[in-house]
Image (cartoon, rainbow, N blue to C red; front, side):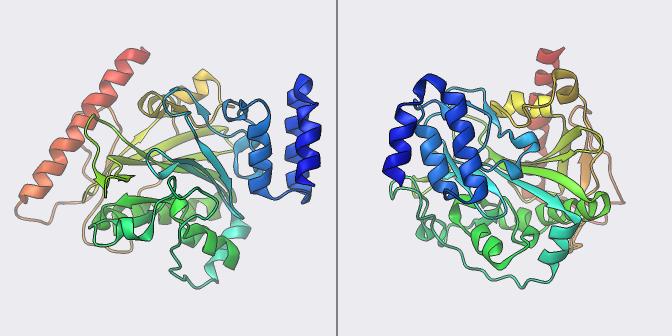
Length: 338
């Protein structure tokens, strides 16, 4: 069957858009597996990676996946469809560049009844030299940080999928278990309230010196989580340093696009990309400290709650300094936009 489809596509190159449409329809009705649909889409002149129509459109707003703006990022992107989310994977960083979900009140209700099973595994659809290994993370000091969280997954298969290393980045353990867990929790609460949200989560690699695990897996400098509310046709993103920190920023899609080189919601126009909605405060279950929100442009963080610690450790001072560097970067971006 695969050979026949390739033969048909070969003779449909004069009408590639219709061929891609056929591939998407076949994948939706079960005629093709998701991974095969992606492979076939790539076969259409080798240019499908530049298109925004996804082979698993149910996880993207209007079925449009993120659009790569930086040519360096577009090299060898692997588009992976899972049962409850989709990943744009980079063999260069050996991490996802994004992981996309469509959360609903119903799906989260089903997810709540599932027991988490930590079945971390390598992604077998990726070539051996492209994938990350369990040994990359062993004794590294970093967590295997989910981009699409296991707690979001509505079925046992979806939860199993979420433990693929293609959905993981090296994440500071205290960040993962405190602030980031609080962001994930607040996102689920909001999705249950509104009934329908689209989420895109991923890493950023900012700077010329990026740490790597075993000279293979790149360690993100930052993490982001985009929340799109279809009832308002509006979005914003959390931005967090990949450090032991309680501080975060809320930025627009326009700002995130400038930083990342990716247009994550290509269906939004420039005005909609520039605007940003208010996002809920993180609600970490580990209440070791208050989280601090920052608009992304102000020079000081707006404290939410009184600081109960009498002194600041050297590590905390270093984190604050790094966060101020991000603030400076965001102000430079704002200057470029205006």
